[in-house]
Image 1 (cartoon, rainbow, N blue to C red):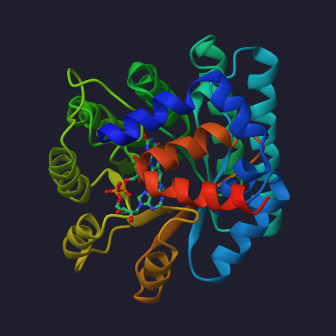
Image 2: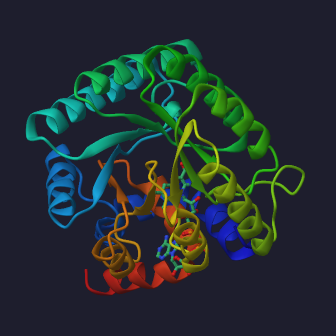
Image 3: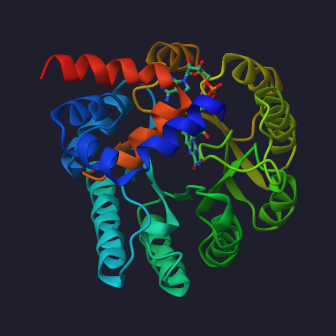
Length: 303
Ligand SMILES: Cc1cc2nc3c(=O)[nH]c(=O)nc-3n(C[C@H](O)[C@H](O)[C@H](O)COP(=O)(O)OP(=O)(O)OC[C@H]3O[C@@H](n4cnc5c(N)ncnc54)[C@H](O)[C@@H]3O)c2cc1C
């Protein structure tokens, strides 16, 4: 993330800005560019229309950093309802979860237990669970949770971030358990002691990790980026490949590119967030591309 992106996160994390933004109609309208809507029905409708256009889906019930057991259990139950709906409607989708939404950080045992409950229900419906990767302090417990639950259920995947120096070592551990691995650049502001700051280095690390994922037989690679150069490398590496892999992109981001990948026959999964807790998600999208603020200002002007 560049200096502008880090500043955006610093400003949007302030509580007054958060309150104004989250309560304004403009904030809500901008969120609809990147979020399917506030309800499970909205997420399901978006997933069905993406399936109809040839893309798979990851459904993300927005939320993170809950601080009490009741909220963490509610989040788990919301995801169970989502898995029921995926199953009943025959949607080609899995779920993406943040472990801090399930209790990681204040009750790690509860988070791991709930992840197991979700993995078991997903397995009944023939689908999978992907663990999102959050801030760097959470990487160790997140990888450990993946190891524990993947060993039991075999249908769990994990996201890794190319900006972190530690990711190649994490992949050594992840490859032992196997499963799907979502490679992304990383969306949080991290210090230079642990993460590449230079965007070219983040890209070079991403390419090296793409090569590695594509060459590791226990792993199903998910190349999660909107960056055309990174996408072209993955396409080249996938020529003649028979093992499963896929591209992943975010709902509402570079939709024309998404469409053309599907039309060209590439496997694509779209990450579809839904729910009322859209603020933190939206500010990360603005930090990645400060030009997204223009959409906010336009929405504000038309309130
Ligand atoms: C499916 C998926 C899952 C993800 N999961 C995680 C995760 O678990 N943990 C995590 O830390 N990060 C996650 N990310 C975010 C990721 O780390 C990056 O912050 C984000 O994808 C932007 O990087 P990029 O690879 O698209 O490349 P960039 O170089 O940032 O972008 C390439 C081009 O894509 C377009 N673009 C990128 N982002 C946006 C945007 N927000 N709005 C509009 N246009 C945009 C721009 O045109 C830009 O020039 C995920 C991303 C994807 C696609």
